[in-house]
Image (cartoon, rainbow, N blue to C red):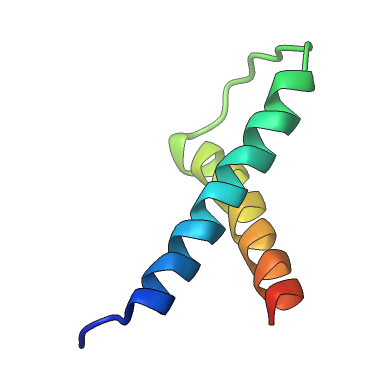
Length: 62
């Protein structure tokens, strides 16, 4: 299925917004904590906020 230009721009906008928000949040964090966690928990800790941010942005755009 081909995407229209509008859908492609929409996905690009959401991606850029998510990257900008994550950069803003992570640039303010000064505390580094090293813990012994499995790789999949670290993946969930990164993936869940990204999904939440995308869903919130999608909700406010629509």
